[in-house]
Image 1 (cartoon, helix red, strand yellow):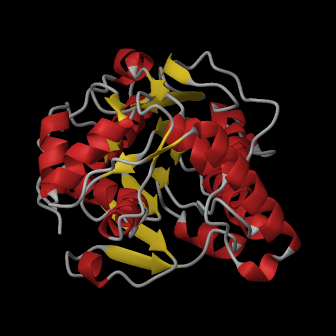
Image 2: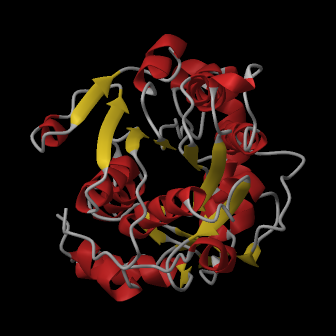
Length: 349
């Protein structure tokens, strides 16, 4: 990964644990911490030879195993919790086990080990309901109902993290200071190495199966992965400093929202792939998604639906968010411009 320029005054974070540090976002947080000469340990379910080659301490374990995460947090001052499951269909029990119960385990581990700071990777989907959102801010409330288990599980986990802020265990004398927490909500994290969104888009475009859903004018906030990692570190530094972000959740993203479908066509052109020219209405797409969901609900052996209502709404509605609060409270500004972000993707093969 390219070195990211350091545009902030470094604040010592002590010993840092990055949960999910071998993942897409987590590995960028790790690298930026290394660039700042912070002491970093990685915790995850796999072996990470590329991180071990840098001399990093890598612990193998799972957040659903309370004993393993408690042991991993021993001696840590700052914990970044980036690990979660993002399935958009099925595996309900596993999603809640990892995303909610696993997060509860992380909080318990932080408290038992007197960790001072916990920065949690949340998602703007925790506030997305049945309407478009343009320039949304932190005043948005959690919707009464979600159309997928993933955003609901992230909402429950985020609430656990924020409720844990400034709380001591039952024996206050065990820890000299309470745990301080913060949640970061980056929307659509993208960049070279993305294992989720863009590979699917590319495969669909190569097979000429990609269809625009809706009128193509929906505004979307995207977050270049270096920007997302930068926001997490700034939040941790603020928790170690003036603590203005303690107990709060923040939207972060790139400098300006994009119009999703024109942006995708620009990216496809840079990749030398066919443009998206065919369009399907939101109403028809959602009806087909509902039918597909019903079919797969009664016939689970069919696997995952070809389309879900959650994905349809993500592709057709506007979901843009302001990072003004993050700028105010911990100085967040994107360090990678939209032009740089697109160029990085263009060069990614």
